[in-house]
Image (cartoon, rainbow, N blue to C red; front, side, top):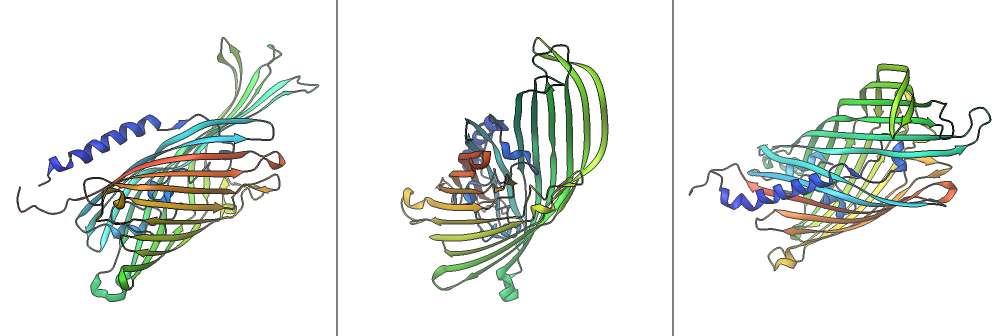
Length: 434
């Protein structure tokens, strides 16, 4: 029987975090210019544990948080434990070009995940998390044309993708000797969301001319999968080395397409449709690229962890409604490096805290105006223990820069804060005394 009194503090923290996360859910107060391409901006949301260590994940396995980026890591969950992991993040964004600056905020729930054992060799995990965000606005104003006169052209995009995952990890029994050092994982992903974009032409100086707009909305609903492998070998003096591999399969996402073209006028701030030029519904597809990841780690158990990851993504294989973007989207690679240090898990409170630091670099999948839109970031964070052993509040801070102001491009600086709550509790046993 569960001991409700001992779980009251955890339930209360769940509730508080859910309420706080709801306040920042889908929060977005700034247009992100680079979300116009591909499926939008990715890698914005991640677990605070990974984020604080520069994003490393492939050779990382713990028994008190869910590392969804390598499904083989689920094998680290204790045989009698249930792990629940929830978090949110908020990014303060600063945009700068050679003649303008702006700032704002993006944020939302970063993940809701859980994991538990089906058998001592088989573990299961599941959850929900964002995959990408699309939010951009661009305009051209006061363009003089002898035939049409002055007009404003406005380009907008909105939406994003989410994914629900159901994962499994298998680790051979200790009876099989060296095979026990390996674990295999599978994530089945249900990807859903929408991608809306529009192009509007407005004539501000001539009320006799009708404004026009073209809208496209792609509704996405499909399945995909990614695979993972991990190998951990325990050495002398509680040292351990780890190796991880991941492979994200290319995904073909069927879409329900809505195309609208119409003219309108404005009156008292409201739009009045005058003529529906074309309304068309059709089927299409989005092809997401395959991705490979590899990671190495060294760990002195309960003391020091150091890891490095490499990721290669074949963005040249992306297509939207059978249109490829070889001139804009290029194959990219990313390096992540991070470390965690715990002074003494049996010491005072400050000594029990996990201290984390990391950095990352990505050469960038976007190629605009003869420039790669690269990204670099540094991070740090803490794992704060609470009453139960293995249960922690994880906090991460990250500063990053993407792009440049050269060649008329936009430089994006961001400062991100992430908070996640990972709880591990014994569920699958009967207490002798109640």
